[in-house]
Image 1 (cartoon, one colour):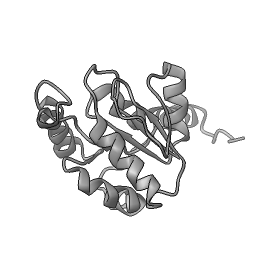
Image 2 (cartoon, helix red, strand yellow):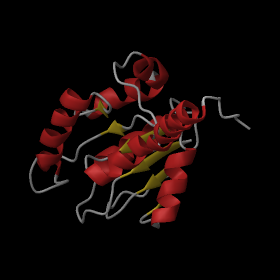
Image 3 (cartoon, rainbow, N blue to C red):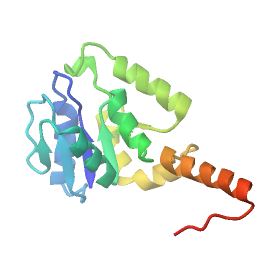
Length: 171
């Protein structure tokens, strides 16, 4: 499943929704697509969608998704990162009436450069290749995501093993 979220900003993000809906219509995307469309005016024809989702439903969709595509709001792309997923981030742009300025693009460029843990798409035409080749692209990334819970458990297990002198059994 591919999950697309545009957040809750009051301006539309039709450009992203229409492009993904067309990729689904053409059969380029074979996965089921679920969209959270926010205040966009475009209503997808080929994908399941809801304007707004509860926090719990957002978390469920992110967890279930093979790919998460999100706008450039930090809360939206940090959530998949926290689950060990590499999100495709398409920042809203002022030139398309999606935001009041280009702060999302500026911020996402900085995150990509410094953290190297998101896939940034600034030109919508690049999204098709990013989706089609998602696994190949993330496999080549220098930084791999890892769940903080998993990391904590591994470190805790190591400490316990060091204190007891024996390995903790995994069930």
